[in-house]
Length: 141
Image (cartoon, rainbow, N blue to C red; front, side):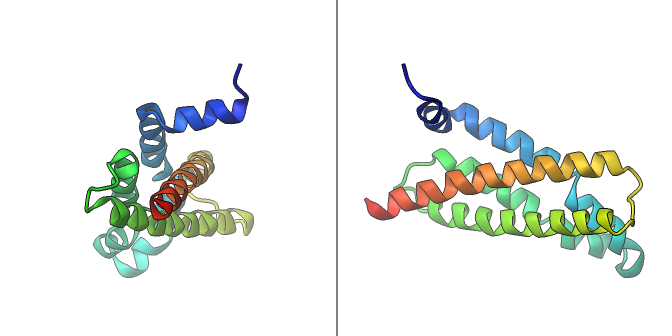
């Protein structure tokens, strides 16, 4: 009988983990990115706000798709690194959302924002854990 840690490591090696991370990444858009967009779109314009807020989302998604790419693929390592930078940017946006909520600047739908922050934090942490683990194992080999 395997331990829970071994079971988690086995699950992370399957494509089910990839799908879970990808779905969570999509829902993470509801947290920090939406709150940041809501805070800045009136001052810099809607298109500029979208151009500032949206790029980390597809980049971390592409990084999540590279979690099971073969190590010999030329795009695997850059995709994982770009996904890690995007995860950091999403965490910064989530931090901004938490800061606004704590200071009383409540967004239009605070429940949705809190849900998105929680899901976004879980998604980025899962992705970062898996990506760093893969990058370390591929560096050692």
